Length: 231
Ligand SMILES: *[C@@H]1O[C@H](CO)[C@@H](O)[C@H](O)[C@H]1NC(C)=O
Ligand SMILES: *[C@@H]1O[C@H](CO)[C@@H](O)[C@H](O)[C@H]1NC(C)=O
Image (cartoon, rainbow, N blue to C red; front, side, top):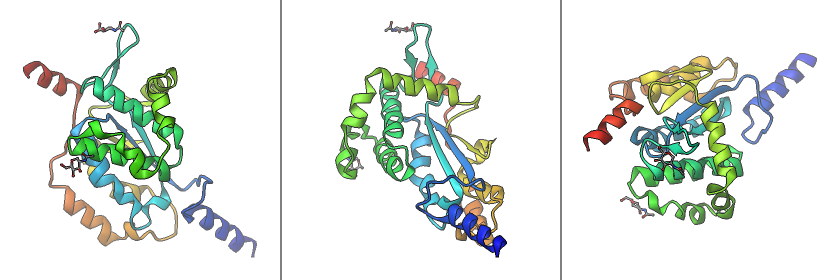
């Protein structure tokens, strides 16, 4: 009786959509990225939403870290790979993560902004507030302030050494160029006993065969500097 009750509790805490109690069996998924890198917006818009399907979200702790290949210059200003607009949008996203700590709130916003990046009209980023009925001031008051800068410095400190962006890490292990197969790595890392529809063998196989032949879409710092120099 005691065993089945604790089994029930663990199951409930781990697999309840609305649970805010972190579960030790969740797999961590961290995306280190920068707002204007094409591979990053492609990943956020076309790949990452897969975690919201087939129960994957119930076993994942997703963390977004918008900093990427940004450098801190000697005078303490930021040098972003795709220019000042990228520094600005990275900070917008950092402020959104801070304003809405829950994935259900910040993910739709970041997805909206990155969809605009993906469609090359990110200057419209403020339309995402109206679209999602979010309070604009929480982000706009933060962006140009010390708070925005402080949040970005935190993301800088959190970003591990990496070879390119998007840099996807599952339970501490970077996926390198195989990042678009992240769901199969999540399923492999999952230690829980409840069956996850998105992790059945046929699903994992279809993820692998669907994407493994497409060459990865990545931005390394040196690559981009060379592009900028030749432009
Ligand atoms: C900081 O340093 C960079 C690179 O030397 C320079 O381009 C920029 O204008 C400086 N910014 C400020 C606010 O001093
Ligand atoms: C951005 O561009 C896409 C594709 O061209 C278009 O569908 C969308 O309406 C545009 N969004 C805004 C806010 O301009």
